[in-house]
Structures are given as C-alpha cells and as structure tokens.
Image (cartoon, rainbow, N blue to C red; front, side, top):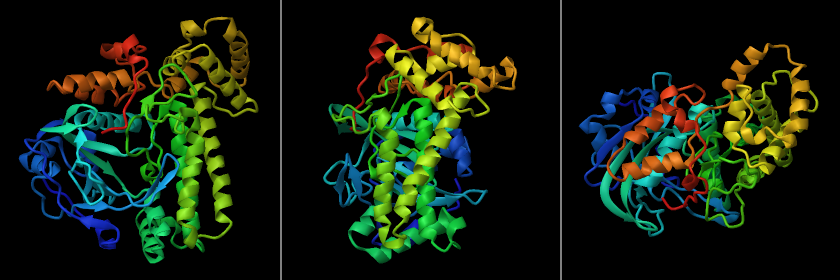
Length: 474
C-alpha cells in the first residue's frame, strides 16, 4: 500500500499539534471498505483489504511517511465558549496528495486517549462509527458538501457509554480538519503570531486565489461564510439536521463535518430536534441557518486581529446572499421551476407550511410530486389552493412536462438515510453481520435512481422508527 504523504499541517509546530501514535485497537477486523473513498487517495479496495492497511488504520503499525498527531482547537459548544478542546479521540494519521495534486487528510476516529481527551477513553463505538460512515457518503451522493469515509474497523474492546458497547475505528477523509474553533483558540489565547501562521496556511493550501488580494484574510472569511451558507442551504433543502453545530464542528471549507446525532426528517417538522441532549432546541432544523451565521460571526471574531473593521458587517450580508441564492435555487429545482419568478419563495413557504400542518413525509412528498403522484395525505382541500397556484406557476415554464419530470427526479431523492435504516444496520452489525452496512452504502450511492430491488427502503418508517432519539455519546 503506497501513499504519497505530504504532511503540511505538522510543519506548523508544537503550538498547533501534539505528535503521538494511536493506541492500537485490539483484535481489529476490517468490516467495510468504501471503494470511492479509496479512489480519492489513489488506493484500490485490494489495498485497503491488505494486512498492512489493517495494521495502519487500526493504529498498530505506522507506515513510512505517516506522522500521527492530535490538533488543538477551542469552540463554542451550545453557545458557551470552551477555551481548549482538541482531538480527544481522533488522530490525523497523515496528509496525502493524490494524482490530481489534491491534499487529503487521513484521520482515524477512535484512536485512543490524547492530551485533549479530558479523562475520556478516546475511543469511538461501533454505533456512532457506522452512523458517520454511512452519512458522510449519503450526503456526498445527494450533492451536499461533506467529509468522506474510507473504511470501518471493528474491535472487541469493550467501551462504556450509556451501556457497554464495542470499540471501532472510522477512517475519515477530508481536505482539512481545521475548524472555526482552531482560529478561535489562537485568537482568544492571544497567540496572534500563530493565528497569522494558521491563516497563511489556510490561504496557501485552501484559498490560494486570495493570496494576492489587498485584504486576503477578509476575502477568505467571506468565502468561508459563503460556503457555510450554501452547505446549510443544502441541509435545509434535503431535510437534514446536523444536531451539534458547535464551532469546533464547523469546517473552514464549508463541508458537513463531525457527524453525531444527525437526522433526516421523515414527517416535515420545522422545529425538528435530532439530538435528545438539545433541550432548548438550539440546533433544531429551522434554527440551522441562523446558527450558521452565529458560528461565522464567532469565526470572524477569531480573525479580528487580521481583518478590516467593516468586514464583519460585509460577512453578514454575504452569508445571507449566498444562503438564499442557493436555497431558492434548490427549492425551485425540487418543484421543477427553472426560470425564477417573483413569488416563487412564497410558493415554497406555503408548501412547507402545509407539509408541517398536515404531517406529511418530506422526502416522499417531493418524490411523488416529481412523478405527478400526490401523497395521499396531500390530496385534500387544504392543498387545493396551493396546487392551483403551482399549476398556474408551471404555465410560465418553457419545458415539456416530461422534461420537468426528468429534472425533478434528479433533484428529489427516492432514498435517504432515515434513522431507522441506520439503526437496523447497526443492530445487525452488533451481531457480527455487516451486510446491511454495505447494502446501504451501495443503495445510497444512487439516491435519485429507481432501484426496484430496494423499493422498500424508500418507504416511510415503521412505527418503531418514527420517533427515534439519537444520543450525543459516541
């Protein structure tokens, strides 16, 4: 197994990282491999299946060029500032360049204790590892910016959470593991030289187009906020709730990151809370756009020593503009509207109000609308005026009904990672059967396609799966 290591982040030095090896997972077993993840770093499934790969990814034996480290950062967690966090159970094993010269982080989640684990065991459990493994790929194939997954390793090491579970290792791929909270840490500890070094690193590696600007840090902030806004617009359009939008879980590339108690909505509920620890609903579905802005403001304050005084106000406007431009485009596309018209947003808002009032499944409704098959619950008098307004709006389009149907089927998925599907895969895996994990990985690779053998995966959830509470513990 050959990897082209280029460990740029480690060069920033001891104030940024703690160099250390993982604590090996005992009796590791490679239980699932994502071939698309392997391609990103120039490997094949056969490479990942090798004994060398298992030893490396489980932490037992480092390969030449690897340089495992834990990253330091801070973060606002549920609105309160935690001044020193860091990789408490994950290690950046190394950075590799692929054939396209793209730099990828290889990150082991569940690597054991680090200087930042605050007394915890540093492990990840099988349950949460499966959830992130599936979700990161599910979002990618929906077109939502996200980290990726390479492989899943199981161990028989016991780990106690709410109950006794077993340890696992998830190999996560991302083009960076720098978070909003990384900037917050160096700013709020008044390490302003290090703050500038971090900002210069991000400019060089991730935003080189701004290096020649008069105010490069300002331009970088605006672009990070814009990417964040567009990511959250995608969440809203596909009915996805992240659950823990702390600033240490926000990527500076605007990618979905650090999956915890996430959830795709079944019945449309604007106030949907997927994290049972979120008692106040801070991270409820309908709060995500505002929290995204809040987090970008926290990042802006972390960059304050480097940016112009008026940039924060510019950032607020930029965030709103990018969010609504993306959200309006996505929602119009879900309705088959290609030529923007005044009143389109009102049409969308009116529909969402009806979906909530009538307790209608969000994904099933839009998929049925694509096929001109109204959901049974929507075929009533409450929807009459909306359908009339929608039909009238469609008359302004210059495409045939068949072309509109084709377009809508590429914007409205048939399959999403419903919580009950993930839970079924987890329960089977806990008994040693990982076939459902692999089946979901295959199914969710083509979420917009009809897959007749898997039609039942598109059904509304059974009663036991309708009101699942997802824990923060992992």
